[in-house]
Amino acid sequence: MQLKAGQRLASTVCDAEVVVVKAPAGDVEVGCGGAPMVEAGQDVPKGTLDGSLGDAVLLGKRYADEEAGLELLCTKAGDGALTMNGAVLGLKGAKPLPSSD
Image (cartoon, rainbow, N blue to C red; front, side, top):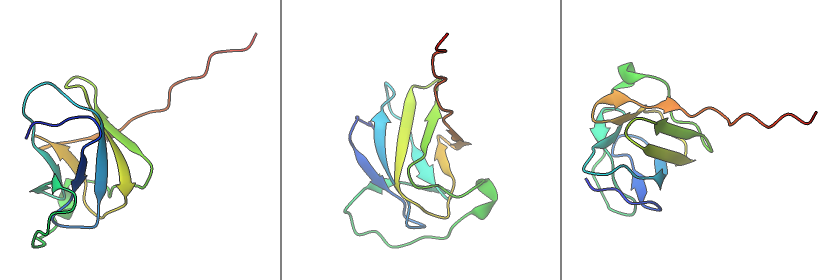
């Protein structure tokens, strides 16, 4: 799927929803709980959650793959782990604040 910034995606196996903050060049498959995510707003039958992939998605947290240039913001928490092309996405760390000598 070709992603673009501002695009909303929803999980087909749990309640998770994300917004694309930074989109990579080219096609990628973003998944949640072991199943591909779809455009938010579509009616999709719920599949089976694969809980072995990792931790649940947390509301307000950013998930990223720096090498690919993908960044997602979680707008609705869910039980599945976010993946890109089958690899689990990690939480994006906070930027360090500049020191105030």
